[in-house]
Structure formats: structure tokens, C-alpha cells
Amino acid sequence: MEHEVLHLTRTHISHAHMDELDSVFYEASARKDFLSPEARAAFRDLWLGSYLTHDEQETFVALDEAGHIAGYIVGSLEDPAGQPRYATLGYFEQFAPLTRIYPAHLHINVASQHRSRGIGADLLAAFLEHITAKASPGVHVVTGQGMRNVGFYLANGFQQLAAAPWNGRTVVMLGRKLP
Ligand SMILES: CC(C)(COP(=O)(O)OP(=O)(O)OC[C@H]1O[C@@H](n2cnc3c(N)ncnc32)[C@H](O)[C@@H]1OP(=O)(O)O)[C@@H](O)C(=O)NCCC(=O)NCCS
Image (cartoon, rainbow, N blue to C red):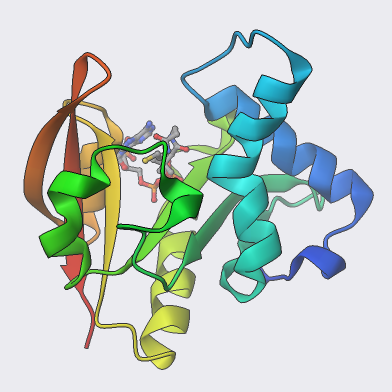
């Protein structure tokens, strides 16, 4: 199936596409149960909403043949270590020496029925080209040790740089320098 990657800001994402984007986000998210609607909204804001608002230019979506959202990537050029916005993500204290070298970061999700067809690689390529043009020196992601997505990042030029215990599990930081 063909897909198309678009560079969109929040104001150019239709309501229908925003709903689909939320569906892809909640489907892919490891966390499914929330104590309150506010907790659910805060979770969405931390991993998706704040990027759409504060890092509007760093948003890319993939549309399937029928024009529905198949996946998205959001991210930021700013180093998250020490920023109040990411204060709940305690692992950045340990990763701070590395995030200085790889300050940009991203969050990517592809709807389950669209995975393993290159959509993730295309979204990532578009994002990396964009942040390279903005002179970012490097990019990182943090994910769970042993997660299948580690293979996706390694296949796309990232290297594992560090690991840290967090919330009863081990998270790993992977990074890629940019030209
Ligand atoms: C990780 C992810 C974004 C990759 O997108 P994608 O469109 O499936 O990626 P591509 O088709 O370009 O590459 C797929 C390859 O990446 C690897 N991969 C890593 N994680 C994967 C996953 N959860 N599902 C499928 N493939 C995955 C595999 O090696 C796969 O190769 P294959 O085609 O032989 O199965 C997507 O699978 C996804 O959204 N997964 C669930 C959410 C997630 O893990 N997001 C990242 C959070 S840090």
C-alpha cells in the first residue's frame, strides 16, 4: 500500500486527522489505564500534545492510500534535560551529559496495521532531514530495554549510548549524530 509523508503544523491538521492521530497514539502507548480524564490528558500532553503546540514545525504525518493517518512523528530541537516540561522524566538527570551532544528528540508511532512497510523509516527520514537543515547536532530517543523498536532505531542509524533504571525497568538512550 502506498503512503505519503506530509510536514504539517497543528493548525493544518484537520479535526478528523487529529482524532486519528490520537487513536494511533493511544493504541501504541504502553499505558492504557488512567485514574482520571485529567491524568489521561496530561499523559497525552507529555508525549504528543506539547509537541504539537510548542514544536509545531517538527511534526510529520503519514497518510495511507485512503487519506487516513497511518503514523506520525513529533519532536523537539531543544535539550530536554533540566527543562520543567520534562520534569517527570527522571532519567534525564542521568542522560544530561549525552543530551547536550544529542539534544533533539522525537516520538514516533505507526498504526499497527501499517507497520513494517517502511512508513516509520520514511517519517524518520523526513524528520531528520528537517532538523539537520535546522543545524541540530544530534538526536536521541529513550525507550525500554529489549523493546522491538530498538531494532528499528538501530536499523536507522542510531547507536545505543546509555541505560538507566526508571520506574522499575531499564530504559535505554539511543542517539544519532547529524551532519
Ligand atoms: C517502531 C515503529 C515506529 C516503526 O515503524 P514501522 O513503519 O513499522 O517501521 P519500518 O517499516 O520502517 O521498519 C520496520 C522494522 O523496524 C523494526 N521494528 C522495530 N519495532 C517494530 C515494531 N514495533 N513493529 C514492527 N517493526 C518494528 C523491525 O526490524 C522491522 O523490520 P521488519 O519489517 O522486518 O519487521 C512502529 O513499529 C511502531 O509504531 N511501533 C509501536 C510504537 C513504538 O514502539 N514507537 C516508538 C516508541 S520509542
